[in-house]
Image (cartoon, rainbow, N blue to C red; front, side):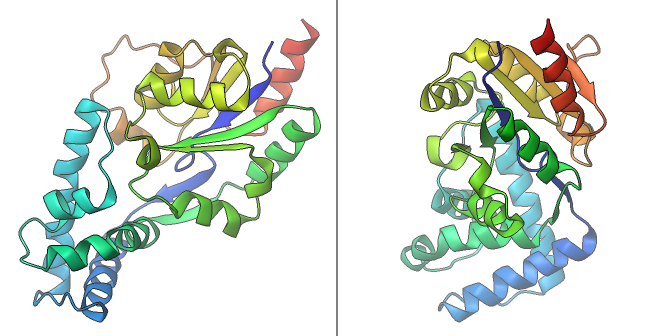
Length: 251
């Protein structure tokens, strides 16, 4: 019996994508914040935006390979700003805020149109709700959930930046089940990728997986083998989850 439904954030509860314009805006925002905090970098914003994006891709390659999430300072120190001689002591003090800026300016984010109604229905029918998100920021997911007006639906919010592990590491899913007071087999997970959001919960023994496509899916799953297992329920809309669970309850 499913007692808890846990959601991925970016690509699942949110529609998320980036463009050349958002990448440039991100570079400008980072340069501006650094300058205002005594860490000026003399660089063309467009070239800087491309450079830190390229460095971030190197970080993602490392973190995905090892299913690890470094702390915000290490990400900026060892990857995003590794080629820029800024004061590392000052950088450490602002690295979390920079990570929040990164997540909220590099990407366009908006709540999926049916997310609020889906969460309301599931909550009303007694399901415990949670979030597990891969994110380099300690605060961005909480910030976004609050801005969308849906944070109160969730009894658990688990972040890779807090635990030091990334999906599909099963430990993230095991921690969520334990903190929510349910067994892994009593959990359903909803995500937008097979590589992270199907493989991870299955390794942790979750009872069900749902998957919805997003702008991030193709790139995130680009290394999957052709025979990779799909979610138990591929869906086109989050609202489908409520009906599927209702039918399963009926037996």
